[in-house]
Amino acid sequence: MKHKKLLTKMFAAAVAAAQPSKVIAQHLPAKPKGRVIVVGAGKASAAMAAAFEKAWRGKVEGLVVTRYGYSVPTKHIEVVEAAHPVPDVAGQTAASRMLQLVQGLTKDDLVIALMSGGGSSLLSLPALGLTLEEKQEVNAALLKSGAPIAEMNVVRKHLSTIKGGRLAQAAFPARVVSLIISDVPGDDISAVASGPTVVDPSTFAQARAIVAKYGLDLPAAVQGHLAQAIDETPKHLSNAKAILIASPQRSLLAAAEVARKAGYHPLILGDSLEGEARDVGIVHAGIALQVKRFGQPARRPCAILSGGETTVTMRGQGIGGRNVEFLLSLAVKLQGANDIFAMAADTDGVDGGAEVAGAFIDPDTLSRARALGIDPVMELANNNAHGFFAKLGDQLICGPTFTNVNDLRVILID
Image 1 (cartoon, rainbow, N blue to C red):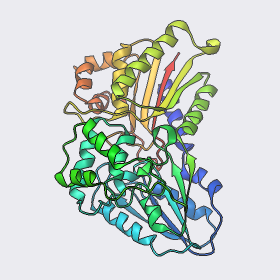
Image 2 (image 1 turned 90 degrees about the vertical axis):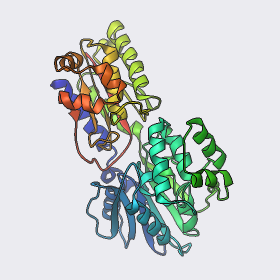
Image 3 (image 1 turned 30 degrees about the vertical axis):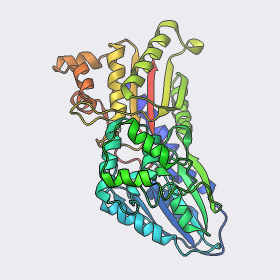
Image 4 (image 1 turned 120 degrees about the horizontal axis):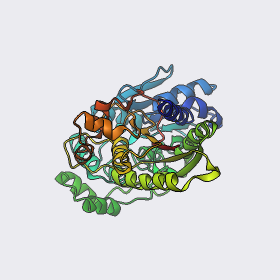
């Protein structure tokens, strides 16, 4: 129990380091002569809007869209809830309204864009000639393909009227300042929420190559739009500036400090690890076993930490979940090694298709499962890690965290 408490405390510290209420006030831009319009999208956007209202001294108006259940009270900025990870009509309507809101502004006006992870699905406004149903089909195919988030967003940008810098383009000549909470590997701001207010370096040709790479069977209208390539995303935005206000690395450092105070030597492997979740689990197991066999720095217990966003290629009948799949793969590879405990969770509170942040493992995880008649290897093959940890009572359930800096993986080695 003491290890689970420490892991939970580390997760809480990582989430706290990325809370909008703690980071927005120090990044406010200069006041304009004209209006201040706030727009935003993502799992943290409502909390960001509330924090901005509290910190800003002056009149403000606007609209943000967040995931169902992630709304928080605001006074002047409207908050709309929509579906994630597959878009719905509510998100489409909000995106259309947002695009209209920033049009007709002057150079004296200021647009504040509050962007965070999840915004790509929440801010869905199909390109001319495409329907929401076709965009939903594309999203579902991308989610099942195992493609990393950066590649998924390249395709999404080129099927949209608002992503890939087009929202900032519509706001010209108004000044656009984006306050961004990163949930993507390498903190590529053009990938956060598919970058509606920043320059997009990707192209239609790249989008087509990604579709071919994963053999995606997309609607004919979608394939036709990508082939015609008549509306390339903007490669220059003279009116736009972006500020990164929270990131995976900062949250990893906060979690590492909790481990250090508990007597562990923290070892951060990186904040942008990618790849198949089960493969990353095997690699982490190898590192943990190496530390266990040959010691760790300063001859103290060791805490291995990593962040980033892995992927799950769906082959079984389960619902996936990259953190729990990583964790089950880790447990299978460790085979009950003594003195090794771990947690993996998404800092937004939702891992894949379940309202569960992640889970925990300990040296008894596999033996407890087998005592219940559960085959860990079969559950992993079936992409049913969520079901596995639910039966063991080892899930991490925290509800909405109102932020999103991607995944936190921690292995404690005593």
